[in-house]
Length: 478
Image 1 (spheres, rainbow, N blue to C red):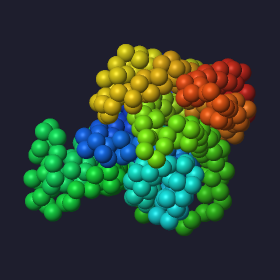
Image 2 (cartoon, rainbow, N blue to C red):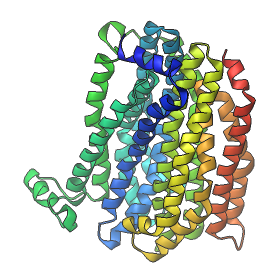
Image 3 (cartoon, one colour):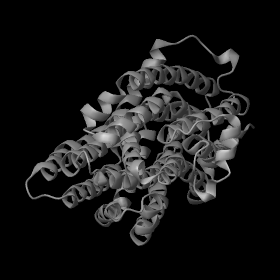
Image 4 (cartoon, rainbow, N blue to C red):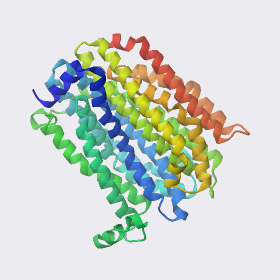
């Protein structure tokens, strides 16, 4: 019995609570580590001179969300592939697993080429015309976005390969590789951001090494290149493990592109992609409203504060996606084996485990918010705006996590369209109109925008819990 078959037996027949905790905890930590790339970069950027620090932090906050649009579309296709592979793995169809994996890889490569071209040609249009960034934030952000989106293939493939491993029952190996990637990202970021120039005492080792290697001081642009190179390095062992341990992408399984299967992946994946894009677009709407209503060419304090809090909030989002990924695998494989009741209970267990982590993050941001924000930017106006966001939004992370995990469990059953409709109901009938009112009505402050964000998260949790409890998505999957 190979590794994926042993993992499948534990998912299908082991003690559900302990097996899901064993499987999901590394995934939640691993997805949280995805955000560590961004947090490391933001900390290092926060050590730059004051005249560029605030604008650079504001720029990366916007660029993260713009770049995430492509990442989320790709991840939606990976989620669809995961659902297809989990069902086939539960049925014991190993040839089907290999076929789906190869065709999905071709789809992701095509998508990454498209987004790379978009980032190279349209970065300024996205930053200035779409988001409304101003001044130095716009200039720095345009340069950063060109590199980040131009190298989209690195994050697309990183998420895709780790998602395939997770669908086959492996959760610890990707986490180990992500730890290595984060260490590498830190080293490269120090060298590329500060170059041979001045650096904080903690990173005094960097300038001599950069000088010896002829590495220039790139500041914000260096953070983009460091992230890209770290991801590229970790892709090599990930691909080799996919081939050697799980039998994916081997020469005898590399079929010509099969339009029918590729269309099936896109057909199942586009609702997941659209749903996640809506969430990122809603965050961009918040950033755009704040940039347009509460910043000027000379004062971008509000954008800087939002750049910090959104990067910290992404930690909560990605931890939720980690537990959601665990729920997808357990739901998909148990449905493939005909275990409907166990499949449904998997979603509840994953949501409960995630709830504990969401409550902990909300408490940390509430109690240590000042210290966390000051770690990245010590300006008091930035800290005050960020703290106001955490006061209004932090307590709603529990509801946000509930919606993320139960939605992912439904996607594991193939109910991607149902998940899209649930998200669309909240976004189009509440979040967008309420955000526009809060952003443009006279006498309204950014506190009202935070209230809209928090209420949206609560509605997400309520809608998904009600739909999951009814269980119609399971009957449709049979």
